[in-house]
Image (cartoon, rainbow, N blue to C red; front, side):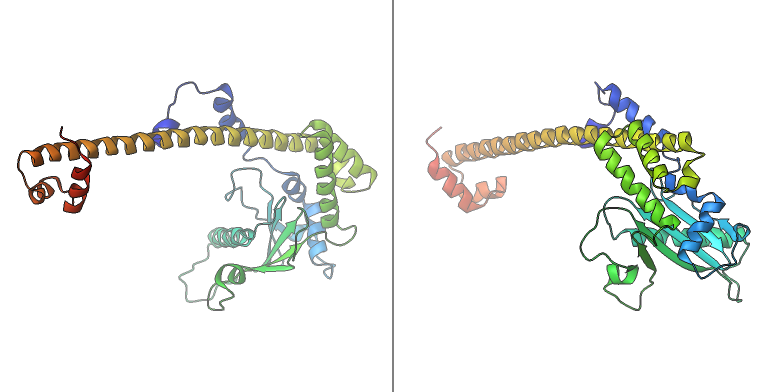
Length: 319
């Protein structure tokens, strides 16, 4: 019944018709995170934040291997790149901490290795051990603080009780970076951004104020100074997506509530029908009983326990 209610129903609102297309329009867009770090100068700064001991790596040593939004149907904040035998994957966790992010990283790593093997024409069936880049996994958490914030998360620890016999991946969790580095600046940017949304709502003014404040504080200035309009468009796209998703969620919740109400009504009607049918069956059995059929015979005919028939017949008046 729910399927019938959800398919081709009449009276679909204009918002319901518009929202799926509106959401789809933005599913392949960059976030500020991916837009900034797909640019080699900023990607190099990211690498240097992770490996401050390396003073020799340059932009020419970096190769971006970010997957194109395979895991989520929305703006994506994932970053993957190769550098001198390392495969570095970062995922941003923006709002609420969810330990499932380590599973997301595991799937991301597997898909990236699969692509790497294909692009380099490696044979996984070869007897020769393949040379693969060493993985480094990171989570950049820009949400609100929570108790017992981990420095590292492990797939085996979180999902399999620390069983050493199962496959495992580990990721370092970064909260603020080091003072002044590109990660620290990005985390500051997200905090300013959230504060401006709290003040101005999901508006372009919130985006403009975020950029103005960050420029004044020398936060991501190098990135923002030449891309103000572009960044506002990216952030506004996020606003549109958030608004559309919230409206879509509201419509779906409302639709589901209506469907559930109708299911409950159907169940009540079905229960009432079953009760009436049972009463008619007992009434017919009682009529035959009055004509001389034994309760045992009626039990065989109607499939009703003898004790039930005795109790029911005791309540009947002649009909």
